[in-house]
Length: 348
Image (tube, rainbow, N blue to C red; front, side, top):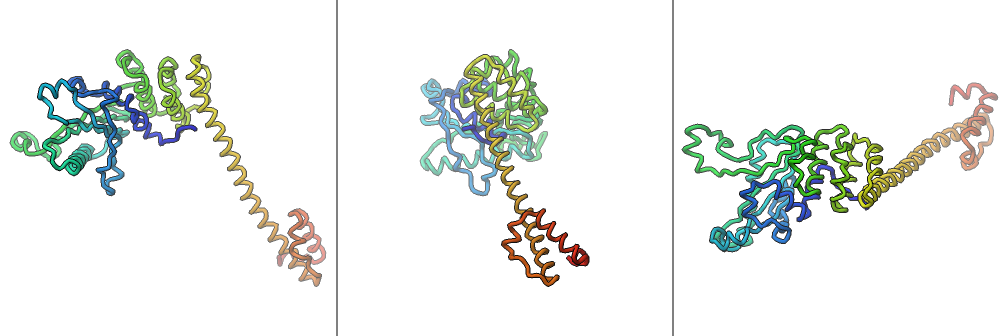
């Protein structure tokens, strides 16, 4: 079936694939950080965000992964036995006031959860946050939680900053790149699925018909994307409001690669079928509503005819007999009765 998910969650759904997430991290993390971590699918494990309390469910982190350190650092005594990094991924479509304060809250809750599960622990996991910013314009907020959050500066900050927690987060800002940039040589080494995802998100931020552009519908790129991700991307494009869907379908249908064409066109065909089915259902519902309205009108008209017959001293026809007649027949009966007594038209 066609994968249904809210369009603003496509980053989370796609990056839930550990292999894709690792490739994203290789592009997003500073080199000196990536070299310390064991970045392969076998050493990156998803972690449920079960430390989030009920009153904070609407702030639940997008993804959490437990990542091991590379063994040579443990062998050199630079990493304690059993130490790991808790990597927190957050996808942001727009800046939010006090965003870094929310990240601070995650760190505190994560540490509390670790200690509750490991009461004898001598060390804590380092919680590293990676933010994928998807805004149309570059991200303006500082990628850190520092003394400025406390309203400190200058000499006061120098004296007191050491008493306050501070941290940086890794920012991968799509707002600073155009579709041409992401399709260019600077991003050519990116994993195909990661690159296709970033192009989708950037095109969505740009709006208009960017999702139908050749940058996004690049067959040479899409044919290297796995089938499940390709189906999800096709669904995302074809269900986004404002996209010229016929233009997209024409482009997909022109693909030379058989797998890419069949995969994407199957999604298009399924959506067309769903649209036709919904149209038929809406048509039936509309027909029922119209039928009810017309039935009420015929029932009222049948009552008027019966009343007119009684006012003229006639034996009224049974209700069932009157209701079996069409609206036109009932109208003709009433007009015939009014011809016998014109005042009926004014009374009824």
